[in-house]
Image (cartoon, rainbow, N blue to C red; front, top):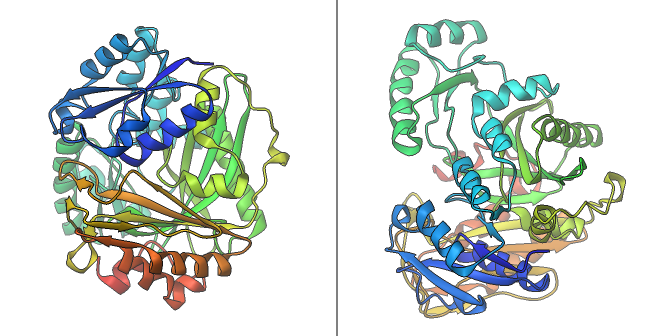
Length: 447
């Protein structure tokens, strides 16, 4: 087992990794920007190293600064969390070339799955369904128009190196396709330094289902069941739950087995997620893989009893998974609300500032993952996530009731939050009946 790990991230995920390390008897080295220097959660680290000014590109995205901190602190491994450098194969390669273990997959797997065009090809090879679309990158508008005519409008334009909803456009006719290609390429170039796009059939009102996988260095690849992630705005997830409501048992098994096949085909190691879209007939199609821990991993931990972050560390240290597929439960129901410092009444506009009062919820079945407290100042430089409110109860109805109660208890003064929005969603008839899809928020809240 490692003796000392550097956590190359900030906020709630950094704190989550701190806790996993402490429980494994591992020393924690934290890095921070000047904006986070006084953040209370840093006191739980054994050592803190400031790596630069507030902008991410000069701190949390600066590979040289992070590696320098790791070498100064003499760490055995680096945990990247999510976001920032977590899916950067160059960072993983640099870590390992410096004899520092990267707690994540091999860079070869990251390269294969990180590019959506290559990931689609890999899925086909593994016998995993993919949405009809281009076999590779779209080079010209003429090629795009011809393909769209063949598979039928509407189509979705996607950045090959994309994620988080950037570089994506829906085209319902040839004119909007030409405009969308131009916009998507420009956005992809700005966000990912890669203007490559591809096209696939757009599924009307799909559900977004993802499957958590764990794979060790000894050839064991297992799934930890599925998560429903369809409550989202502009392709950003807001509420996740497991099990996915209304999923037929045979569909649940098929989609989970498909994720395992894909991970095995990619030579994957560590924790990862395969994401799918599902139509109204419960036909599912692979769309992308995330080669890191997910924001919503806690709900899977709640229903399986498996600490995914600890197993990321154990796997990186060479430990084999001690359980088999049939031993992994899916007990009860778990739901997570992302509490963001955003104003839902004004297009989910970020609202950084000083938190004057913070009264977190509690009680049976309630878990709160957060790095925030009264007096914490939410910086304007990073993602607006300030907490994840998770509940776990014997069934979905009781989980919803517990979550409503917890949201009513939750008090945050000083910055706008998504708490009022979550209350509305949880009381909406379509959500309570499990009859929602990725257009749910847009249709009812216009976001």
